[in-house]
Length: 103
Image (cartoon, rainbow, N blue to C red; front, side, top):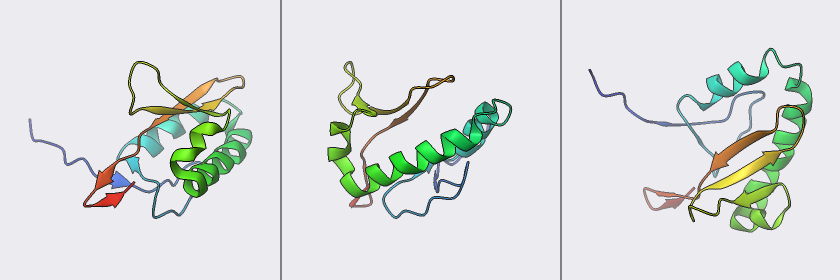
């Protein structure tokens, strides 16, 4: 089976979020779309998600001081954005260095 190139992507769903700091993995936008499209929660989620992405971009590692962010206990490098609502979505993320650039 041919190896699939793993590339970083921009956030484009549920709405575009331009950032030079925040990236997703190649299939994240489609996976989120599959989860939200039929839920009836897309608009509310999009509003909260944009707010949390803004926190992450501005505060960077200090964002985990906010109650909607958490560091996962069993793994010191994985964090979670918590969306406590009907769907109880968690968006996992990490802080990485790629090509000497903090992401």
